[in-house]
Amino acid sequence: MNRKNLIKELTNQSFWHKKLLDHKENHTTKKVELLRAYMNLYIQVQANRKGEIRNIDFIDAMSNAGIYRDGDFCTSMEILNVFLENAYKYPEIHFTLYVNDINPKRIECTNWLYQKQMETIEDKICSRIHLKSFCMDVNKFLSEGKQILPASNNRAQVIWLDPYNFG
Image 1: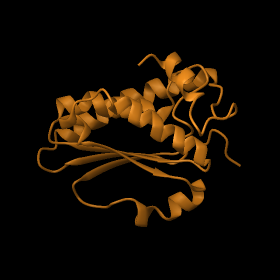
Image 2: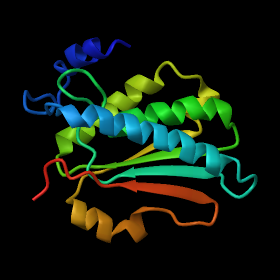
Image 3: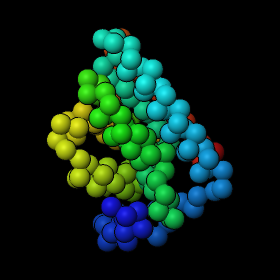
């Protein structure tokens, strides 16, 4: 789906508010580009640890709404796309995207975007890509991480904390 059309469709959702989406700063595009590249390499390395890693998680502790005002995806949705791309390459790996934001409307938006992205993906891929959403203060989310996030020897996890509006 065209990202500009996503913005248009968002305005018709019950969670919509004109201040829901943030303006993207100039450095953000490069940051997201670098993170995408890193995650692609990270997945390649972890997936090639044959039999050792069966789950790859990305934990976005301050995830925002998933999309910026200009229609570009925020970190969480870009990583979802990285997961989708890699799910075809590594059929034995399951991927989980954990998102947290203090604003419940942003989490609703992220959940909606996830559903929109997954509508066009075949079932055998969808069954291996998961979204877990949380709505809490970042400090609480991080301190309760042991209860929230599964721990096992066959998981590889990246925790992303980008304090875009922290303080």
